Image (cartoon, rainbow, N blue to C red; front, top):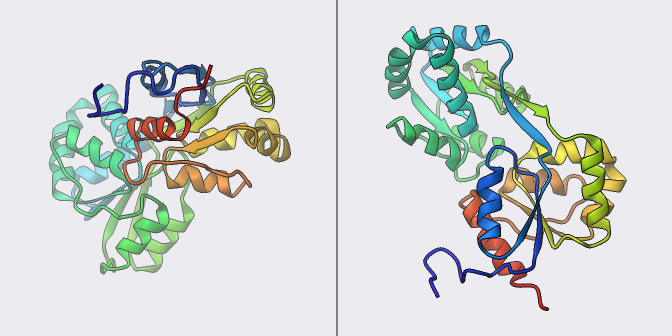
Length: 279
């Protein structure tokens, strides 16, 4: 038996685990299925490039003029989409943007944007201990932001007024950019079907990996119905942002990774909590 990554090859044998993950759906399903589980796939949202690249490229041009002292990266997806937008629509901006990116003080909310930076040969300069907006604010409270110009890569199209207002009250000038959007990908019938299986206790666990998945499920089912369905299974969250979104809706989150908010640690937590289903 190998123990380097997981306890055994079939630690989730005969378990049924619902996964709303979209971008890495196949990766997550593979992790579970290799351990004997059945992955019940129900993508709730999809990630799309921002429909209009013009404001993104204007933001990049501002960055290339050296106007940003700092850059706050809220997601790894956001940095990848920024680079993709540049490569698709204005590849001549890429080299200078990378130079400016290296120069800026980079603040990353959690490990995913830090990993996206490493893919470009760069590193985070400030990494808050808590991968939330409040964690970013708490960390930046230790720094003098007066007069600094700060680029802010948003989480989808969420304007994150809490963060922007804090930065501006601290004396900074902010320049947000939204390089991607969330689009509904599942029809209502599929979500109702998932809820029915949850209510019938045909699902051993459901693992949420983004706040948008939670919002979509509750929007379709309604607060009471969604919370009732989720009460019939083990609810897992990939990290504190997702856990808080569920908890605010009255859902008990039974497990989440301790500090590394990725699919493998989430899978490990599911293994530890569930184990193989008895015959």
